[in-house]
Length: 113
Image 1 (cartoon, rainbow, N blue to C red):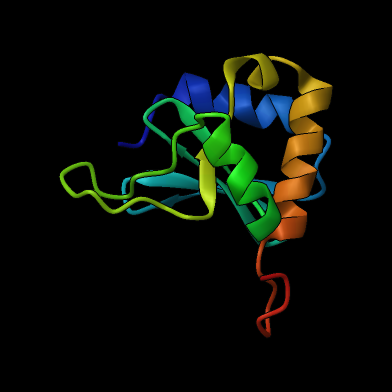
Image 2 (cartoon, rainbow, N blue to C red):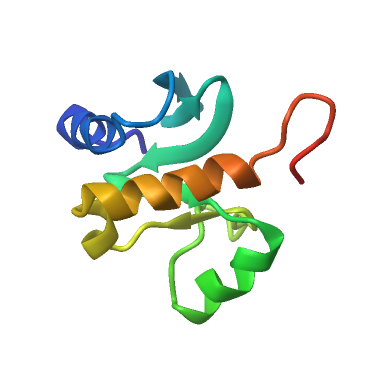
């Protein structure tokens, strides 16, 4: 589910401090990039950010929902988790979370995993 254009515009506005921020449609959702690093997904009016392997446990313990690429299948992402509303509404905190997501994202050549 792609989500509303209004929600996507809100997310992009909140993340304006990230370098070279862009959004690209992908498989019914929207991918978020900073300087060509894929770090987030907007789907169904929910923002999902990449977490590191170390951050995955904390995301699961806090009850954050994992991104589900296919609504009709049980497959869940192990790397992208929903951002809580309180963080989404706090520009500075959301920017910190997004910067951590960028740092956790794989780089060309396999680095960053």
